[in-house]
Structures are given as C-alpha cells and as structure tokens.
Length: 382
View 1: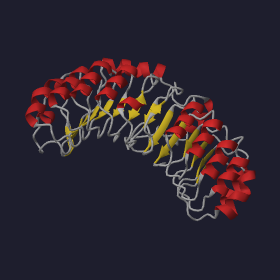
View 2: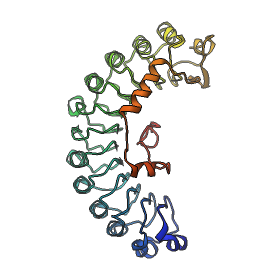
View 3: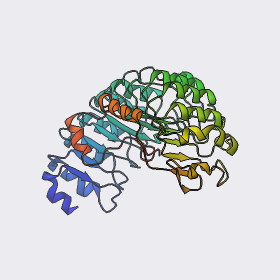
View 4: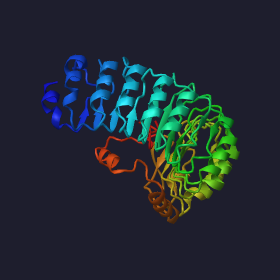
C-alpha cells in the first residue's frame, strides 16, 4: 500500500485484481482524493472492498475515471453501485459481474452513465427485465453488452442500442422466440445465446433476416433448433465467420453440408456433442465443401460426436488437409478467400466498436474485453 500511496498523484492505471494484502478501509479510501489522473481501475476479487470504497470512488474519481472493473466483490450492494453510477459519469467501460445488485443499481446506471460503451454482467441473478430495460434505454451508446446468466430475464428489446456490435445472453434460460426482439440489432456482429433453451427456429430465422452481417454466432445447447435454422443461416448469414452448434441434437449431416457449401467464408464450426451425426452422412455431404479450394474453414470441432478415425478424409485429402490436434478436433492453416477479404474490408468500414479517443487509449493497454466466449466477449466463447 505504500507504493500506491506514494505514487497516487501520478497514477493513470491501477490494477489490484485479486489482491488480498490491502486494508481498503484504512489504506485505500483515505488516499482517494490524491488520485488526480486515474482513468482505469480494476478492483475485481479484492477482499475488503465494500460500499464505502465505492462511495469514495464515486466522490473522488468522477472527473477522470473511464474504465472500472468491480467483478466478484462479495461485500458490495446497491448502495455502492449507485454511488459509482452517480459520481463517475464519464465511465465508458464497467464490469460488475458476480455482484449482488438489484434493479435499483440498474436504474442508477441507466439514469447516469450516458457515455457507457461496454457493460459486463455475469451471474447478476437479481436483475430483472425492468432493470435491463432501464439500462438499454438510458445507455444508448453501448456497443458491447454482456448479460450472462441473468436468469430472471424473460424478454429483451434493445431498440435504443443502435450501435451495439456484441451481445452476450449466455444462460438467460427463459428468453423465448417471441420475447427476444432482434429488429433493431442491424449493427450486431457477435451474438451469444448459448443455453437459452427456449429459443428455436423462429428466433434464428428472424435473427438472420434482421442482422445479415453477423460474424460470430453461438447457438450452443439450443436443442430446439432443427435443420430449418441451418438452411436459414445458409441463405442469409453470408458474412458468418464462426458458428457454434454444440449439443444441438436435431441437426442432420445433410443440413450441415448445405451450410458449408453456402458459406465459404466460414472459418470455425463447432459441433461438440452432436451425437446424432453419423460417419456415413458426414462423408457423403461434407467431402465436397471441405475439400473445395474456396473453403476457408480452419477449425472443425467434432468432439464427442463420432468414433475416432471415422472421418479420415479430413486428414488424408491432398489439398489443405486438416490436422487432428485432439480426437475429432481438426484444424488447418487459415485461408482467406475472396469473399472473406470482402467481409473483412466491409467490417472495417461499418463496424467501429468502442470508438473515441478515450477508449482507444484504454484499449491500447490491452484491458478492454469484447465480452467473450471465454472472457465475456469477442469471443473466446466462454
């Protein structure tokens, strides 16, 4: 704490994530007025961070703070979140995962954080439709939004978020076809709806119609979707780069083959746990698209689908064979076809997530996450 105290007036970035040797009440809160230049703070998983700490942050850092990570703070309640929202109105990035906040915090965020561009929630299970709607209505500049595991969410409309490019709804179990409106998501590039068990073919059909330039789509564990969804994706989602269909048990090898033929730009396809697929169908319907010179597919995940060695044609083909890194997990060098180059140029022109000099300077620190498939955003899928 001596190093923090002695350098407080010159610090621009402060990362204390997971630090346990700090008495925040005694050693941090009293020096908050001395942080005159602080723009980025990460207190995630720090023991001892309380509402009092966040009240101090809201009272002292509001004029400079732009990025704040407060993940996994067990002692924080609505009182602390509201203090941050009301005091730090220049925030562009906010991470509040695993915090026991209610809609009262969501109302404060929606009412005050008008400059917010990236918001990450995971397992904030007390939030409801009303609170999420308040954020969507009030924080219209958001381009990256994670609501992972917000299990009380039953309907969602993001009509005010015309700039949103990345949306993670993983594990929002009660969203259904009629209550997830995609009509205003034309700028979306990445969508995760894994384990949204009530979504089906009607949702997928609406999605690809409304969001034709989607690039990353995670439909993992959507057991209701059928071949109709794959044919809709094949017809409309021509810019798709990665697709996760793991544990989708109603898809046929023929429909997957049609998808591969129709989307030569597709680079990643995950079919983990699709046990209904059979080697005969895979060989019959996938050989031509996967051996085609126009195919850009470089990752094919068939783990827990087929018996080892049953799709030998993938590794034995003369032109661009796959490598089997793990049993039934295949990769090969990436290849950019003409369509992929066009897609990348198109994306560069139309997609500018987290724009502005403020966020660009923060992004250079390597700290902004796209809300990932593995971190919460662009998506390590996790």
